Image (cartoon, rainbow, N blue to C red):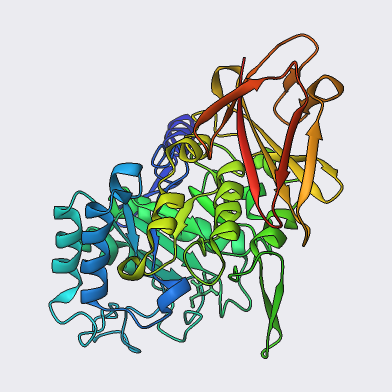
Length: 410
Ligand code: GLA
């Protein structure tokens, strides 16, 4: 009896259990794969299911040649639409041979040869959102398939999941990936419907917190099928109390970016600043082959990226709204803070921010900036220029939908 209890205890502490004679099931995500928010490119926002080998190769080439890779973007993720509509005779998924005439493996090898990483998409349901074979009932088989292909990232969606529980479905796939043995970042795309922030930390490395993004500042786009996509400021506002759940290796994911798509450069700049303030994963969603130099400059802004990639990994929060100008703040490592003034209105606004009358308190993580006790140097991150300190009122004019991002250095 004692022996059995000991064996059981050993099994539980290892979080592994044997299945038959040959398989050893592992539980829990691969730890440590996303200690700062992951960065890369995802096909969905611009291309939907119109993806192919040529697009991926060109995107990988430009990721390297443009400086995006040097700035930190390294995952190339193919979203929905990479497979055929049926599994093969063995039940394996089939990469679409028309879109990928040389097979998926050789494409992945190509992406890896450029020093980049590769990701794929599937869904916890019976079918993906676009109607391709989902993973339900094939979790371990699909995980082995991905490990063999050599992918590094899996986005796992939530369409056609009637009758299953999110927490269990995502845990099953997480365990399957762990058992397959290849470290793969696991991206939960469940839209926040079942509070993944409450149970996602041991399961995945990032989780979506909202429905899909739409390339606008503050709109709601209503689809005819009775669901909505959201402007980026709407998403930023959507879940007020979940920042305490986000951090290194377990990120709140505000969705792939729309920078370089349908908004103007001012709105793109604010979108990017917000995703940096929120410590969101940074997946570009534009066509690199048509990227303007302004878009590239926004996406590769080193100062803003250092806010997003700060090792503390604390998600920022809205501190106050002053006449339509939102003040977002984010504690950074070494006692610094990032501060963004976002003009949410349709007209230009003047700000006169008296630091001495403000005191930033982060009640979730216990950080505080008391400007009566500490003077901070101020750096304007978009201008890459020092601009005084917090003993003086900060005055500036901000165009409609524009942002000013400052770093306060103690
Ligand atoms: C859902 C996801 C999107 C995208 C599509 C693909 O809507 O939220 O990000 O993956 O499915 O069909």
